[in-house]
Length: 335
Image (cartoon, rainbow, N blue to C red):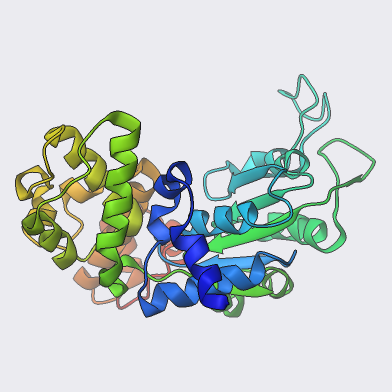
């Protein structure tokens, strides 16, 4: 039965796996629909596009799809498209030959070659430049890639799972994302709902995270009702990733004692959803920086009534750079 398949993916993983996949456990209608789609696509080799806010668990979805597929015995390789320097994207994805450029002292395999036979997860594919989107499209369509500095193509057998926190369809309309690449990756879309839209899953997720902490570090596997209630009331702007950080911090503070309200960050204990200094520092650097940029340009636009030229001048940056940040973070002139 389909329900059994969903339960197996979300709840019947062994303890080691459960601690890693806790973020996509749950019985809320929104998460059950996500799990139903995961169950449908695991037996295929189709390209998948996973959408959702930062920290919502898109990589976890990709890992489950890979581990429940026929490619599970082959590599699962993550390509963080948003963090690779522009000049190194081709080399990282497709490899390079010795002497291809100044610092290419040895031949290097790209991530697609490393993932051969398995799955490559193209995290934040929305951050790729139009130039690199063309290169990626050829690999996805033909299964052929050319390392930098080579005159010969290399065949690879890789399943692609892409992810984006931005609206790719909207990016196609404004010309920042290629329409043909969008159609190529959007074969089987799966949306991961933000944590605030599935609060009823929090007790399950927290229980899984506590069990993982207890098994790995001998820390507490318990939480008081008062602390759990505070977690339920919080808005979780950083989604599952923020929750994981909060639970890890709390279990370190509590040791073998149950997690209490006193062990929670101030923003969570106060029920404050705003991304203040505590929640900002609880995030990975790239996410904290992106959140800062987003809030900064929004405030600048509100200050100038939506005038981009004035906002850029007020911020001490060029108009072109300001527009680049607007597009990067999908912020409108209204802020």
